[in-house]
Image (cartoon, rainbow, N blue to C red; front, side, top):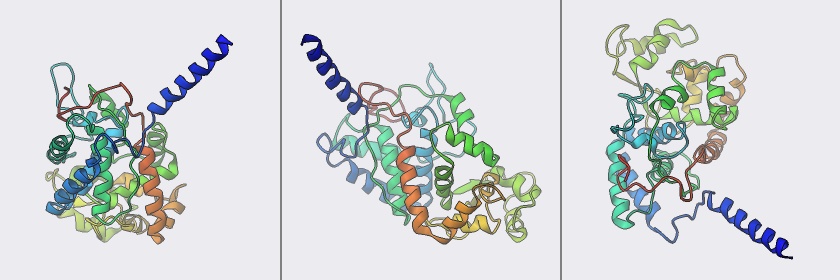
Length: 315
């Protein structure tokens, strides 16, 4: 009987231990009921001030989750004990919006001190940015905690570069628990934002699976040498609207990055790109689902990590 009681008690404990490690859409409903509205208001203001910021905030969440999970590590500045992720090749002179995250964090701290994690702020800000630019909404799962360290080496190795082949993209996403369909849907985030000349120069000068007039139009702003930081929109049609034009561009061989056009280049993902190019509702639905899944990559929960009061440094 005693062993039965112990077994029952252990089972209950085990159940709650698992439950406490799960993310929940109502995580802050009691501890900080105004958290989501506070973040939304700040994101709307930032995107209204500069529409490109919506893409930047969305990208921060991506680049955070692909390095040891969605733990806010990308926000950490370098310290004497570790080098942060901001200077990693995929992030240096490219990832931005840290000042906006600081502003959001300060507003949330004013409402609920030491309650809402920076990792959760990134997840919510990504959703609110997409919505602010006309894209779909989704229910963000919450309860992530912040890491106390970062990994420059993992940022360099795990975030897929713009030179990636289709097989490399599939592998990089698979390593994070995301399947090929989810990879193609998440790539649709490139329907907003801009890329630097250094990221697409080789494509517009050397590749043949590119619309000739499209390539020519880009060369004036991206010379064969110099102008590395000159920008071009990832979606040449509607650079600041979250829609399905990214996929229409791919069908017309107008993908800006090599990795973009790989999704429509006679391979296994062509049919999915075609589907999204003709149905924004299908893309929106799949993108929203994939964002929820990506946001659940290896979160720190329970007593792991901490709730940073300043997103740039540990407590």
